[in-house]
Image 1 (cartoon, rainbow, N blue to C red):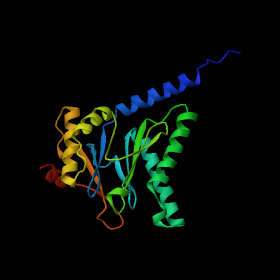
Image 2 (cartoon, one colour):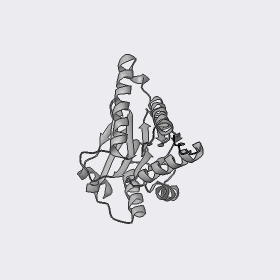
Image 3 (cartoon, rainbow, N blue to C red):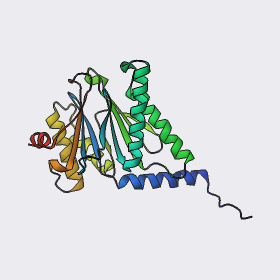
Image 4 (cartoon, rainbow, N blue to C red):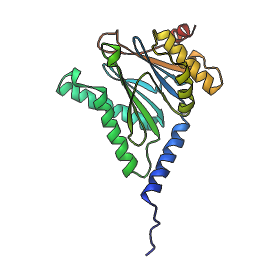
Length: 227
């Protein structure tokens, strides 16, 4: 009987992490930027139907980079989870933190127990009645979750985008137009090519809207905001 090939747990985890990071690096980047009225999402996406940014619940949005089928499974599962909780209890009991913890547990379990990890990273964002109630939870392929503020960069160029935003992001973004222009300019600077409105997917969590805060911006509106 042949002796099975032994791989140390440390090496196995490292190989899985490297595999996941390579898959994510091939994905186009997403930026989430806090502004006075809520949270703005800007991503490069030429598809009109395969969205990387979506609504999860009344005040909660989801963004994912990497393999579409994998983060789409999580998005659908998240919608079912929060819909059930909101139905059983109340809509106010549905929180971004609880959803982020559920995603973290699922991704952590997949990373440690499955042969192939998910090649994705996701963001769960929510807005409250005031700017101080905004929440941004960044969840990695291995289930690691961090609570962020100000902005979040995900995808293949996340490090370069982070360096760019650290120098250009103001202490307070005042309006949506400034947020969209800053996100667009960061993507253009890092990618080194022009990105017209038709190649962008832009959405917002607008705290001024009643109940359902998520809104997707159409191409004409993005053109107007970009000037």
